[in-house]
Image (cartoon, rainbow, N blue to C red; front, side):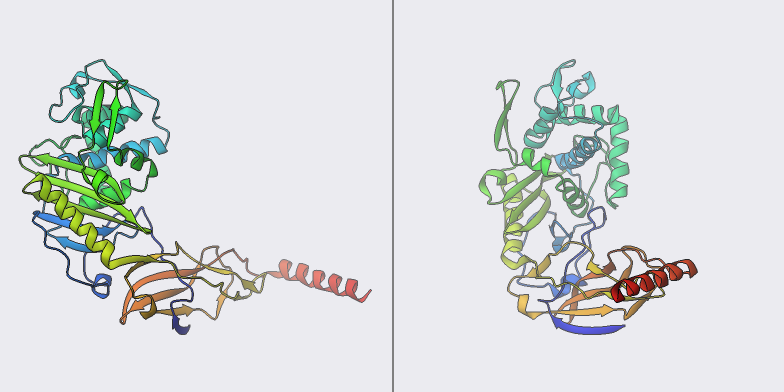
Length: 393
């Protein structure tokens, strides 16, 4: 392997596998990212992450199990978005409300048993008004029954690595064993925000249903009063206190702040706003210019070289103002033995700040190369002889 160290203005991109569930805890890469002190929060638990990578920028008791209240509906909305993506349901589908869904209580839009409402309007009512009856109706439609849908919620939570979460209902109403953590809420919020469609609903401040007869006002005040807010979900019960998963984007940087167990509604919004302010003031997404690699030699292949590229996207999180302090270490094989697979890893780039690695990306082949055999060698010799004869003539 040969190594070269150069300024970050060389090649670079950061792979962000959005189906990876776990969010890394502070430490490791976060140690090199340390900037000014984060604000104090009065909420019982809190976490701030960068949305694309899941990098943790702040946490406080992020793994403490706490009733999540209506933040539960983030999972309801995620499963609904996934069902829409898979074309199992459609926004124009009309859902007939069951007696069970209509009788959820708490925050609601007063659905009546037998009433029909579109999936589109039920999503709006769930995301904006935090309507329990609408969330239950969505759950029934996606899962077949509320109990089956709750099983889907727990199964998806397990798939996402939400190890501190167990759901008992789709509404977030207090129930024994209905618990989550700030870290887990950040995980499912991050996955929900992959769907651009959800922002159409989560950024609504005021809207109506039923031809203007039912008014919806967003329970998340940050939608109106915080620049760049993209959502996401509030929650309040006697056991949970005041909770919020707040998301925002500014200058290409997307953040998610989760606070749980705040003493008052205003304090949850203050905590989330202060965390978002801290993130935007101290971090940025950086996209360097990329240069192409020279082709890599291939031994015993039907071609002598193979082209290379970087795997992943081309931006990553850094502390503000640190661009000139970043260094890149490139490790790349001198040659590769055929056969070569498309996308085969042949090297990597490691980016460091203050001698601590903060990102790395694989260097991969862009095409497959078969191994040379007798028949391929015979054809190649024949081609070269023919080409040579043509040139001589």
